[in-house]
Image (tube, rainbow, N blue to C red; front, top):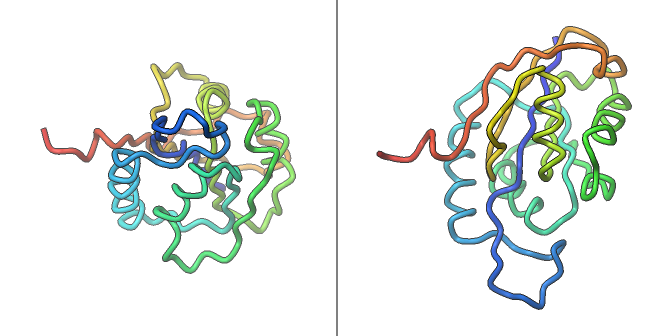
Length: 163
C-alpha cells in the first residue's frame, strides 16, 4: 500500500512588493496555520519515507514548521516543483523509488489542486494554503497515473481552529 500526501505551502506574505514570487516568506497567519497542521501531522500514523519540496521560500518555511524537528532524512528540494503542472507532478511521482511507501509533496496551486482532482476523480472547491490531502493506492509508483486513488483525508487549517 502506498500513500501520497499533498501539502500546499502555508499562506505567504505580500508585504514587500520588491520581492520576487519565489522569495515571498510566510505571513504571520501562514505560520500559525502551519503550526496547526504540524500538530495534526504529529498525531497521525503517516510518517514520510520521502519528502519532495519546492525550493521556493514559502514551501521551505512550511517544511521547516511541519517536519523541521522530525527525524526524516530523505528530503529533496526539486526546482521542477516550483512551476510543475499536474502532469509534471505525476512524472516526478512515477520516478519514486518503490521502497518509499509514504511520500510527501510540498508545493503550489493550481497543480496540487488539479492533481488531487485527477487522482481521486472528485471535484474540490479549493486546495487552501496549508491544506493536506492524503491519498492511498495499491500499485507501483510508476503506474500512479493509471488508477483512482482513495482519499484518506483532506484537512485544512480551519478544521482545527476554534469556532
